[in-house]
Length: 294
Image (cartoon, rainbow, N blue to C red; front, side, top):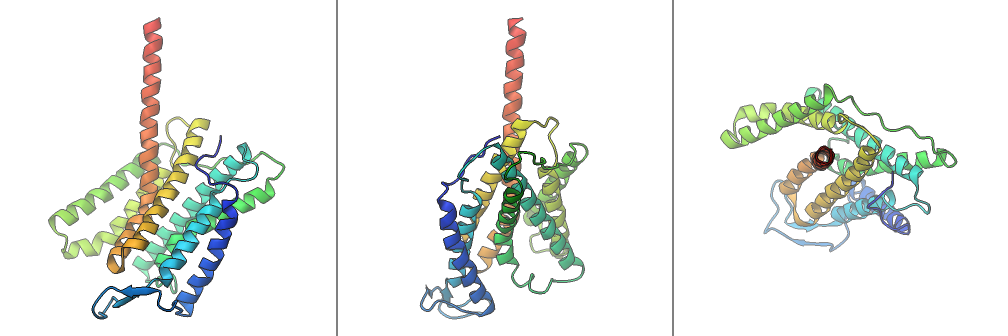
């Protein structure tokens, strides 16, 4: 197993130089209401209930610094890239994505049943953006520190193919079908608003089951493809977030953030299903060639 799609080793230092000031600026912006003077421009004629006339980009700058910095820290090459570092990276990616989405679903369920969690509800968008990368960096650093001399690291545990994979596919597609039907026939209906959160939670659980369940055949090649797909999914997801931060504001930005909550899982699923399809095609072609030779 080898790690691909990594940045040069020196990018890790650049990552820290970006992420630390980004966190400091984000803290000042959120807790101290600090905004960089004259760092913005007027977008509207006057303030309204939810939008300011002059948009200051201090928060956006903090997001850029933190996201780019953490991505560089997380996915820069080690001085020695080998089998161990690849296994550690897969393990850390697996746990960071798993822990983040489990916490996200639990927080969503809590908000549906009890109410918003203090602080988390007010700053959900900021927390959702950098939490997966923070978990990854912590997990990866921890595993590196305890496995310096050993190549023995456990493989991530995935759910069995049956029944979890089919259940995940069913819940995901059922949730997607619901949203399509709701938006197509009655986008403003009361029934849409009363059931959307519950269906969204089911949809997310379905994607999780689909993502973290095994294929019928699991081997070293599949693990390699999982690592590559998870990395590319993270890159894709944060590219969406960075573009949205530059281009969109107010409610449109919140809609994009909602999409970004599941785009990582969707990208991973699509890529892995495509790879699985191509692998089956190659295997069938090889079997046909062997049959022809006989």
